[in-house]
Length: 306
Length: 306
Image (cartoon, rainbow over all chains, first blue to last red; front, side):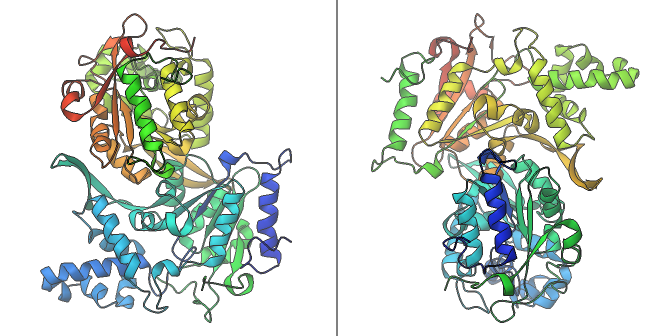
């Protein structure tokens, strides 16, 4: 076994599956060879590449934006669902469901240009800290996944993010942190309005949802943005199941992976009870569907870089 | 002037503009240097990279599909707008307007999977011939543009298609003909339905339009798919004007180009009167907007490869 790659992955069946898969699809002249242009890998982001507990970063980012809006309109502090966001009242937020919670989060940025949003997102990512882990959000990424992204890229793969998170927030850090450029980020998005303002063309964010990139919408958006069926996909919740099955049931060698958060000591332990992104069917039927379950506790010797 | 590149472009001011622009943005340490990741170029397809006269290929493709549907339901032959399509009645089709004409074309493929569509599109492209030029549609691409795509790619650019044409029809040939992979093709699209069928995940095309990628929608879709403002754009009609202005009004070096079809001898001569894709404002205001007008007659010494 090659110990210079995937160093944060424990030796064992799971790591061997990863190494074998990549060896097979890259072996020129071999029966399972896949030409580089078709080596597409898609990764969920929240809970797969970085922490999503106690709630997704998108919601913390919106909350900080909401604080500014509440300064201008103090009545927001007493109105739901804004009150719940401003008070980090996860229990109330979770009752909204993932899509509604995210839609409210996205709506806090209505009227902002894409360039302004990018600036605000970068400022926030450079200073805001995760409430439980006490570190920058961009330091809440999983080191074994960074190594996996590097390993795949070194073997000619093109890595994509396909996440329910807002497409622009992810684009604000994905290139620097994951080595994934903006055009390889697919996510939820709001509609925009094109307008000439002071001689400059701008895209303004609207409050209307364009796409909520979860469940069946993930493979639909892969079809729209990529136009090829990926050969590897990695997720961590039922929201990723359609993507995992879309990838796994393609012809030829395919690998579908599911991260199970079973490590309360080093990160968090949760699955079916997490209302903002439950893991039930994907876990119960992983065997039947041919999905490989990655155990954070068993398969990773390190979770974060530091 | 370098004669080994852009051989089908005549020496002159326009060719020099192209060469100078690329030289400036690729000069490391120079004031206008753009790092490779940000060297994004976007091209319209119909009328910019290949022929769109007497009507766009998408409509011919739909027509051939419609013939099959009319065999099953002969009443289509007497019903508009199907009658007009089946009879290649361009005058009636043009009265529908571009979006309506294309929507009808897209709807002829409802119910097929993305994989089935790709097979049908490839079969059609391999055999159907342009009604006026008598050659395969994939041989109706402009040789000077193929050279420009190559030249940009050799200088670290990533080329995209951003077209009103159907995204999947373009993806069926763009990689082979233009060297542009499916994930770098943006176009009009219908919504899809995700479904497990006989153990295999499939995306089925619906008749409902997802996006009609024309006018303001072009920069909006660039924002959605690419997430960066391109530094070069090339179009040929008012449908491209928002994209051209979006690119041209960005910071730093930017190049916006407009192909003027003024060559009835070698191709076609048309602009404001072409109802399926008129060119009026972009031509009249090119100077004011900083858009470079390419004259097919003056700037190209060859139109097609043969």
